[in-house]
Image 1 (tube, rainbow, N blue to C red):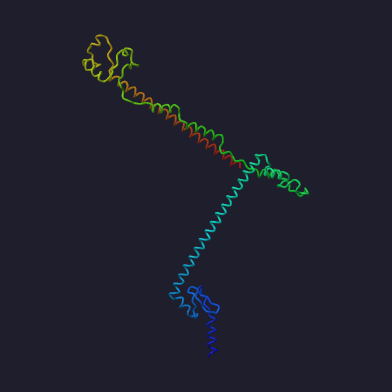
Image 2: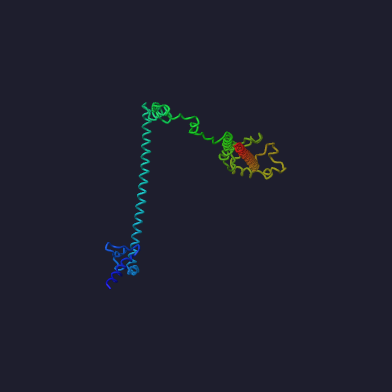
Length: 316
């Protein structure tokens, strides 16, 4: 009977729990990692997993693990950022030191001292590959001199011209065409300087009138004109009337009619406006013709370029 119990106990001891939270102590006792408690028998492990305390401990342990992983990730990112900043600072410091060294070398060259770069070039000129002339005791072991083909390969290629003569001429013509016409500028200045106002009657302004009317005194004001018109008979006020007047009888010329003068001025203003409109229309037509000419020139240049490209492709 004792032997059977010993065998049963040994068999139970052989049954080991394989679980992420299960571990065994040095004495062979089953222990829960989350709860930090020992489980007496392996058959009670399932019941321990279903207990409330175990579940709470598992949740707490997972939160701690996530928090620890997050802190480790933040620490790693911070270290990477610091390393990157140190690298950038080191590069900047090296560039600054190189610039200072170049400045010192320039100052030494200005003072007449020997330049380090000239020494290196002089050393390189002795033998190909940068070796001095007496570096090789056996001349047969020296590297061969560079050929002309290699020099041509390492020589920098000259970039193709960005613009050709035709395109330059086209730009010049466009720039010259974009400049405003001096005649149009004069017209704009004249329009800006001209002040339009109501006509006024002033004394001694008889220029442009016939000689027979230049001797007549001009009207000083509207009040004087009204008094003179009121003092004259109705037949004198109507120039179309055929009745003889005292002025006609004496042979004196009739005075200047203000209405006729005003009408004449209106006609002159209208003619001037029409002439300005015609000038503007003529200038607009010239501008349209110039734009059309430039467009035709652009199209011709495009066709010429396409033809050149086509010839280049056929040759290749």
